[in-house]
Figure 1 (cartoon, rainbow, N blue to C red):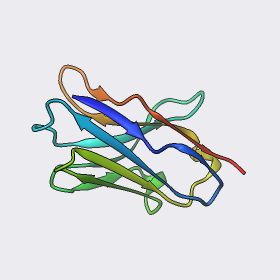
Figure 2: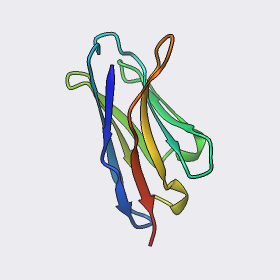
Figure 3: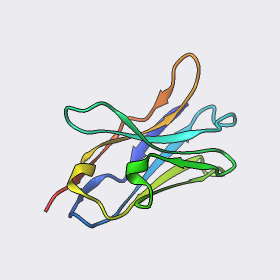
Length: 114
């Protein structure tokens, strides 16, 4: 499975961005898809996950601001980010858990600054 994240950029505080992640390759068995981020000097953290059937889960600190969705027909997962804050500045990654190793996209940079 290959993952390609896109949609990052620079935005002012309070703004919104929509990230996209395209999955290709052996995608028929993909169930869970997730978004993570890694801020400078910090560990990578989980943000949101979605199952093939649409079940979602969010980290507490993004609930109500970030929304994950997916299009199974297009093998896409999205992250709608609203009310962005400077502390949301990070590289955002999509992930598909697998064994023995997870699949990760290359990351897309989000910068929130006035």
